[in-house]
Amino acid sequence: MARLLSLLYKEWNGLHQAAFLLAISSLSAQLLALLRDRLLASTFGASSQLDIYYSAFRIPDLIFVSFASFVSVTVLIPFIIRSGKDGGEQAVERFISNLFTVFCGATVVVGIIAFVLMPKLAGLIAPGFEPEALSQLIFLSRLLLLSPLLLGISNLLGSVTQSYRKFFAYTLSPVVYNAGIIVGILFFFPWLGLPGLAVGVILGAVFHLFVQVPSVLQIGIRPRIVGKINWPETWQVIKISLPRTLALSGNQLAIAVLVALASLMATGSITIFNLAFNLQSVPLIVVGVSYSVAAFPTLAALFSNGENKKFVTKIELAIRHIMFWSLPAMTLFIVLRAHLVRVVFGTGNFSWSDTRLVAAALALFSISVAAQGLVQLFVRAYYASNNTKIPLIINLVSSFSIVVLAFSLTKLFEHNMMFRWFMENLLRVEDLEGVGILMLPLAYTGGILINATLYWIFFRKHFGAFSRDVVDSVSRSFAGAIVGGFVAYHTLALFLPLVDQTTYLGIISQGFLAGLAGLVFAIGTLWILGSAELKEFYLALSAKVWRNPVSAGSEEL
Image 1 (cartoon, rainbow, N blue to C red):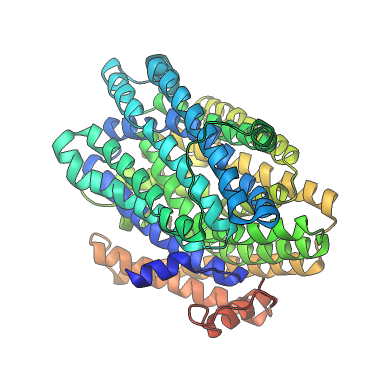
Image 2: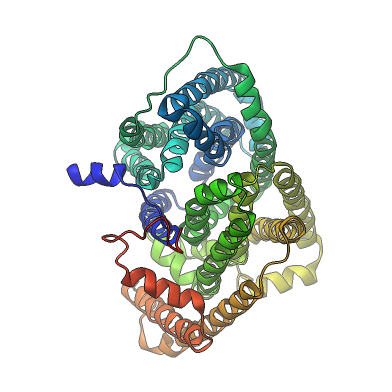
């Protein structure tokens, strides 16, 4: 317990040090998330019940992004840093208590309205569901309305812990969140049925919140409900957060449209979409989110101090490392997609047909993994610079593009036999039913690529062209990724006659050896090309980041 508390209280100052902590914790959370999805897939397969479960998150998630963005770290960290400079922990406590009161009141009111309107809202979310499935969807969605309140309060506390660079509490929260959901699958579902899964989600949200408490208390801040609200301060936060709220809501609405379209397709289509989406999120969260979250407090402080040159330099550093990790992960995920899906989900009621469809969807999602990582960074960079207009415009364009592409590609797939034949043969699913679901991941990827491209263009316009080092670094990382993917693909073929693919051991050994070979050749290519990121990673490891933190004044920052 003493060791855990020391980690919760510890400040993490270096970018790589904090990013490695976030990456390791994110990886732990993602492993639990994969275990969660494996348990769900083995229990239900790609079925109507799992379609109902995943659909039940849509309204609560929309409420969460709409109101939790008001208390999100990307909005609040600059305010907290300024409050701390002006008045210390007491000023921060007054600021946080003010937002805590407003957020709780607004979320409870909206939750009650959503509870009453849920029968109508559910019909919009899943128009393809039968009446019995809609009834279950309404009940689960109502239960899950507790999660936006709990997770929003946790985000509010998380903004405090990140401002003071106590990243461990933030990184631990998704781990315990997924642990709570797993408890629901293993213990509450056999007792309560589908509602037991929702109870597990609520339990995970409670864990997510309470793990933040020790760090906040150690800082000396105790949020509370206040009787008199500082409205000028509140409106200032709302003014900053509103564009982000609209942008995130647009993204959630786009995903809701994709889910609605999937509900009109074959049974299990929503499950196929969500399982593939969750699996492709592993490299995104471990790499892209870790570096962007670790960089954000530093970026906010640099911009606040007027150090624009250092601000851009730190963004370039994060870009180089995000691409260094994301591009090889992208190619390996595409090449090893069937092995990854079969190893993670392939048990119980999850069939080989389910595996192939999820694998095909995973390949399409994975094309945008590196772009998603860049989007995470650019969003935080703009918010650190107090510019919320650009992220709003770009994300709304991206969300609109996803919806338009989803309808267009679905219609094209249905009516153009040449396009259908090309996609089915490219993804090797020509003998399966329900292949139309693959147009939705393709639409999502298209929208994300548009998103990242627009951010790159606008950032160059506002902050100047990136240095030649960034372009060269991305080129080297891309070359390493291509070589690694090529070697992994041919290694799969090499070991095909040597392993029994009807056994779990055969599948995992073939995939592991192919992935290892691809990784070795990717690293070798990067070494030959003189990758600076490879050297920086080695130096960060050799510095024993867990025992000897890099000082705040070093190049790590």
